[in-house]
Amino acid sequence: MRGGRLLLITYLLLAVWSLLLVYSTSYGVAIMRYKVEPSYFFNRQLLFYGFGILGLLICSRLNVKLFYHRYTLRILAGTLLGLLALVLVTGSATNNAQRWLSILGVTFQPTEMVKLLLILVMATVLMKKGCGQRVQYWLLGFVFLTVALVFLQPDLGTALILGIIGVAVFLTSGVGLSRLVRVATVVFIFVLFAAVIIYLFHPDFFSSAKLGRFAYLDPFNTDNLDASYQLRNGYFAIGSGGIFGNGLGGSIQKLGYLPEPHTDFIMTIIAEELGVFGVIWTIFLLMLLVFTTLYIGVRSPFIFDSLVCIGVATWISVQTFLNLGGVSGIIPLTGVPLPFISYGGSSVIMLSCAVGFVLAAARRNGLAKARKVVYL
Image 1: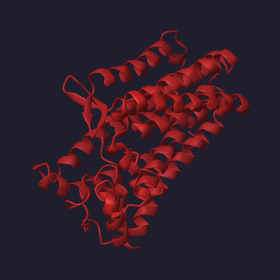
Image 2 (image 1 turned 90 degrees about the vertical axis):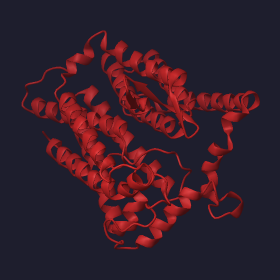
Image 3 (image 1 turned 45 degrees about the vertical axis):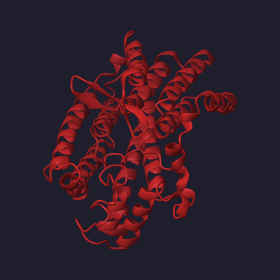
């Protein structure tokens, strides 16, 4: 298992690190805002990682021949589109966005599952049908439809992640860059045209709450203090931490100033409590996971495994950039969690399943080296 052991160790380190940080950042919110026991969010994150490890084990043992079955692609693509359509029709709205589904009392965010499903759909199609012109247009249309459905929720951060995943998988599958640029240009023009139509006939779509994400351009402008409230308090947390931090549990901003310090803005509390070294350690673990995944994908002789690894590495790295860029004020806030670290069941479980597929790729790499695997 070339790279497999390192990947698993890194994943487990991220899990332990996440549990420690979620407890430190959430006990104040649990007591003051939700009126529950201090360990409430820690216990739930522990449960999420329990389900995540179960999903990892299952996905790591799946046989790649399963994806050759004629019904597998239909099930994957149908599930992806069905979830996105369902959330637009019956999903629950939070913070001006309709992103959540509740089935049998279980509430989850379908877009986290969609990220993995999109990777599997693209890898399956390209493995079975190659990268001919007809396949390219079919897949590009499917990626565009997926991104459009997510955009309508609206979830701009996830839509961007899905679009970049699609581009990354295409570029590594042998599609010509010039053709991809031509199609991307047509899509861009179409998106601009659609935005104008939406603005003319549904102006509430571009509400002040959504446009407030651009408050990062001037967060201390007295005319826009409400929109930049969370970002400014994140700055205060980062600035007060300095190099060495105020000690684990020593954050002030998590005590009622940052609304959800254990989710999207968890890195600001890491900076406040553990300083620069805590931030560096967190980023190091995430990047080690990304580069190990890429290493496994590059060395894989199987098309499916290579594309899955590329997709997973793109997913984690882009989402990490969007989260860190948002909380540091480099780019607009997108509301995406920090992978493996932020509190959240949908994200933790789906990312764990993705790591399981990469571990399966590492296992097949070892079998291929021993000349025990003959399929591609």
